[in-house]
Length: 144
Image (spheres, rainbow, N blue to C red):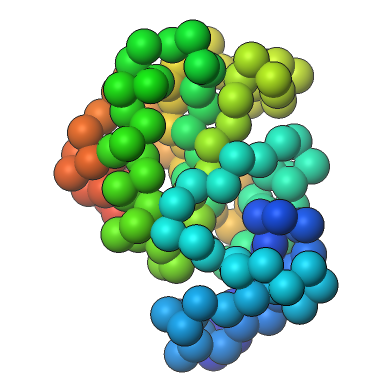
């Protein structure tokens, strides 16, 4: 792990330098002052997702979902539980494909829920279908 990590803020998109040794100390954004990690997935739009993927040294895990999707709603608590156990080593975010249709199309999302892992600015893994929290955590750790 690097001495200093670049972490993009899920709220404003600003890039923040965080000493690796202080990642577990709930670092805040230098621009907007919001916590960089909150132990739960952040809901993001295209601009913030692009910033997170491009400006973060930690892997970004994206849940592409929709409110009308029963498997998505079923997996939501598991994704939240995964965020509690994986952050700040991973950034977990959610993209509502109903509100962000262009973003879903850009990433070729054909079924939901779909979870994608991005590392070093590119997609490294993708899984469609609902997973329980344990399976989700194991899959993310093996994929990133």
